[in-house]
Image 1 (cartoon, rainbow, N blue to C red):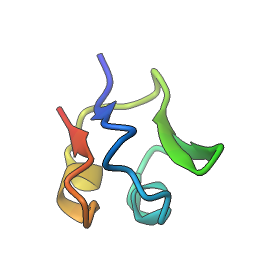
Image 2 (image 1 turned 90 degrees about the vertical axis):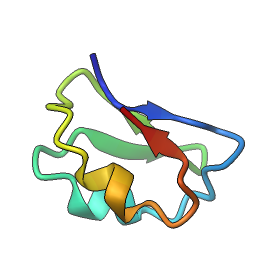
Image 3 (image 1 turned 135 degrees about the horizontal axis):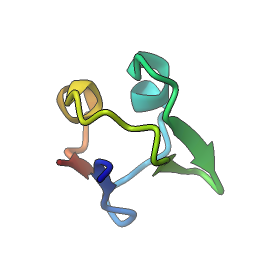
Image 4 (image 1 turned 180 degrees about the vertical axis):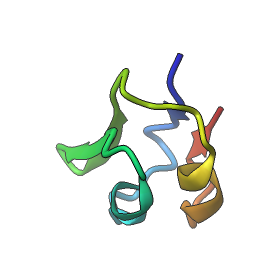
Length: 55
């Protein structure tokens, strides 16, 4: 299971991509996409300024 992105809240800032320790987040079409490589550490949840990511 990977973290979930609320596409309506995601502004595509890339902060989550920058802090992901396993490189599981990429921006596609201006929105964060989280792959199955996600280890559910919660770093992206804490970093997201719009609270667009949840576990």
